[in-house]
Amino acid sequence: MCGIFGYTGQRTAAPILLEGLRTLEYRGYDSAGIFVPGHTPIKAVGPIDNLANKITGPISGTTGIAHTRWATHGSPTEANAHPHLDMSGTIAVAHNGIIENFRELKDGLVTQGIEFTSETDSEVLAKLIGTQYRGDLLKAVQAALSLVRGTYGIIVTSNHHPNEIVTARLGSPIVIGVAKDGNLISSDSSALLSYTKDVVYLEDGECAVVSKEAYEVFNLRGDKLSRKTEKIEIEASAVQKKGYEHFMLKEIMEIPEVIRDTVRGRLLADKGQVKLGGIESVMQDLLKKDRLVIVGCGSAYFAGQVGQLMLEEYAGVPVDVELGSEYRYKRNLADKNTAVLAVSQSGETADTLASVRAGKEKGLMTLGIVNAVGSTIARETDAGVYNHAGPEIAVASTKAFISQLVVLTLLTVALGREKEMTAEAGQKILRGLIELPDIIKEYLTDTSDIKKIAKKYAEYQNCMFIGRKYHAPIASEASLKLKEVTYTHSDAYAAGELKHGSIAMLDKNFPVIAIAPEDDVYEKMVSNIEEVKARQAPVLAITTAGETHLDTLVDNVLYVPKVHSVLQPIVSVIPFQLLSYYIGVEKGLNVDRPRNLAKSVTVE
Ligand code: F6R
Image 1 (tube, rainbow, N blue to C red):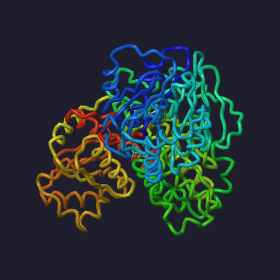
Image 2 (spheres, protein in one colour; image 1 turned 120 degrees about the horizontal axis):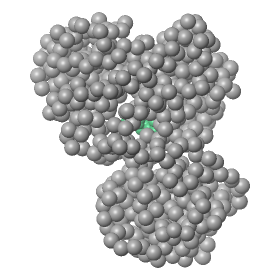
Image 3 (cartoon, helix red, strand yellow; image 1 turned 60 degrees about the horizontal axis):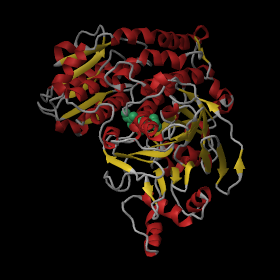
Image 4 (tube, rainbow, N blue to C red; image 1 turned 180 degrees about the horizontal axis):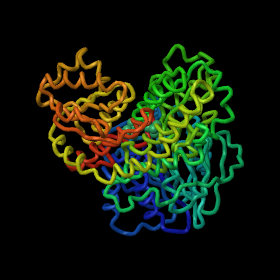
């Protein structure tokens, strides 16, 4: 949420800053801006292209900072765009996070006669640094930060120090890239890939001075810390579209490969066992826990709900699933015999991170299922499993959601085999997992049916998704995808719930999408579909290949390959990802960057 990018080196900074912002645009696209010492900031509302169009001539200077914004305080206007200047107009700040005590700080600054040009909390930070500046930028930043409450990832540069960037983090990610011809700073390592794979992740409470040739890391007291670089393991090509019109479609098409990458080296299929190196060290302790609490937000939360059903049915592990934003308010949080499992693609979601920290404070074991290597949740949890889904650039999660389900399946087998799962049951699931990539690859070769239905569904204003058991959370995920990518109002229900109120909504203009694979709840789903049809609602059913009845009952049917029931949600969710994608395209929407959203939600 908000992307920040800085460069100081031997090359002209402005084009590098723009390029960095383009890679970070998924973190927010309300406005963007750059500042190169010696020049005035250039800012524009809307996507990076608007900013690029404003830069009409070359901007000299080999150091600069840049920002792409997801608005929190103040509407998306040019005045509110970053970087913000101090009162002398010489120090510039780009900020990701929220300054909670900004009002009281602002009031204090205003009484000193300092004028503000924006409504943002971030400008307060710029002015505060200005008041603390006595010739040493690092000291000014440290002094200012000691006065603020809240979260920040910031980069600061100044006309007085045109070859230097000061950066600091508390709660919002900062990574320094060490390249041959200079150094870079970003809120996400994926934006550094075209320049370097050598990075230093700042920890909370750390700051750094970055110049052309060096970086020095300090804690907020000013003690110098020794921090070595780490290698990023992903390839630059992973963050490119590779011929696809949109990242979303590319990422859906990558699903077969993602499943292979997620299970690689982890399956002992003949034994029906799984090797999860990341949690081996805590496995024995984990097995002694009374329950697991899965925390996540949005799609990750729905993945957690599917995981709960798997873990309970196949591994006999009692599981609760909590929203990242709500878990901390639970009274029973302090039960020591609980382990907290955070599910997060970005590993930076503030609400999920807050749950991890709340659990840690109570002395609970914390685990993570995280895609972004080196992210905060990955580093702060006691142990965890990486998804290995590669960078997900489209804002709406597709391949990462699938990989979350795959990891949860692996965890189910890993725990189940230590508890009540037989070798044979484990073998069946793992063999199913091994076959899955080819099955999905074949399925994805022809998406024309979904495209056709998308044209019809693009006309509807409302939609209701229903499913049971594993497919109740899939209905929620499908509904979320439709909302965020196509702006269609939609809701999801466990199908049995419909008759307890929501069925009142239905009529011939309110379609229902029913997820009804031929599994152990199929017959109950068919009854629910009958109830819906009786209210004249148009029905699209998703079922498994070989099913023959629904075709006679509903308006449209889409078939997905039938797989092991625990793996079925992995397959069944794909047509909904594609349906949302094609409806979004049909409506002419920006499917990769839906309005009002950001990929990585680093504010609570
Ligand atoms: C929906 C979506 C979001 C994320 C949620 C959590 O398509 O992408 O709902 O799932 O913001 O993000 P992570 O997984 O990064 O914690």
